[in-house]
Picture (cartoon, rainbow, N blue to C red):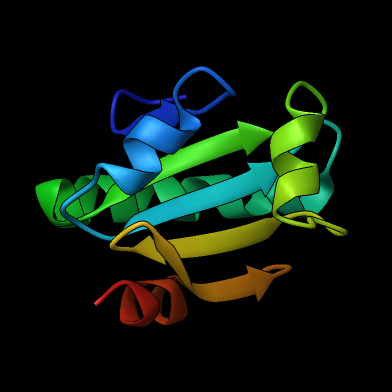
Length: 105
């Protein structure tokens, strides 16, 4: 994981997501998930291109089942976009970089 992407777990999820002054993209993923591996480079690009105007984070559902359960994650990858601490958008499965960037603006 790059320096531009924050790994979330139960100890930091709420403080990072609700305390952010910018949109927060949270990728729910697992290491064994092929589509999750395919979208990872796109998230890296978004994190580096958009810089401080967005926060890109990842939640490993295998290690954080309580967070996945709280947000009713049924399939991965699932990306939640939070704005002002609330879910503004949900994307299930692979999507394009342009689509993700549009949902963040």
